[in-house]
Image (cartoon, rainbow, N blue to C red; front, side):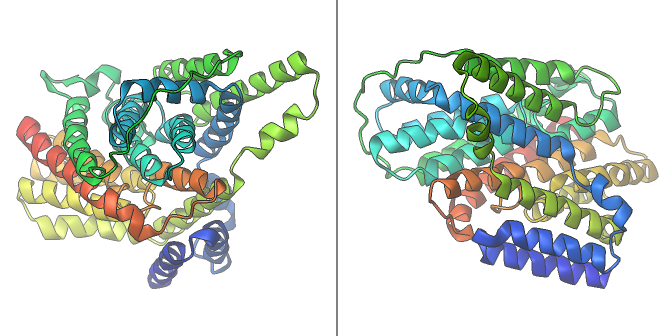
Length: 421
């Protein structure tokens, strides 16, 4: 366990220090976890969340077709027509991303909305960094709002036997959706303050003409299918990823039939960010390694010793420790590990476990926003910026993400206790 902790800490220090080499650092660390015997070789393949990998690849492909259709440019024009300055353009995009992310995976949301922000930035000749960071953290925040918004929500729904509507009203009380939305409003106030100096006026521009709406239809179909898939019991774990990649292939084949240009395929595949995919794959193996070594389990047992018999103390520890851990480790294995722990704690003390479940989800999902590597959406957003020549330092990211996260988590922490304690 000590070896696993040392390797894990060293890996994350290197990831934060050398952003250009993150994928290679993660892969090297993953290889060391296996070579040192911390994670058995036979568990490597299953450690990778192939649903997320396929989802990213497929959505990136669809988004490439979406960009090629000039729809992001048209959406940018429509937003520019409605807002007075850059500040409100950024706020509008972050709110739009949050709404979509409540129903669609947050990585997919970033991949859909970031091109719009990038187009606006190019039209105004300003940096897209601030707007894309705002989009990423807003989409990650709202992932806990519904059953289909994030993998952690899906894990909770399955474990606690919650259906789609339970996230809106649960046992006659407001569901997680309302807690997250009120937290999002509090966090938006932080964005308004952070971008208060972005007052460059926006002048109306000639609207872009979109001649091919098929990629937009593909995106809409993907959203609908992802929502419908959430109601299917005992579906394959890679269902969402297969939906995204299948629709990407449909779009490619349709483009080829329409243009008869064989270059359609290599051009589209070049748009997939393999650096981000490799980084995530490496991180999945690393997290599996520390889980295998018992690190996460040991941390979980520590909650029981520290909290005693006080429900408020247990709840507080679970929320804020989840924020801290999720800032540095992937929240999917963490939530999967902590769900049975919270149930066991509740059983020993004779409490209903749901307040602990909800606190866990609030802390773990929102906590990923603290650092640039705490959530897949953040990693994806920085990957998009890097492809366009913008390297974002961890400190620059955290100047926005830390106050944003604290506002959202504090609001969710208080409301969850008031609603369900």
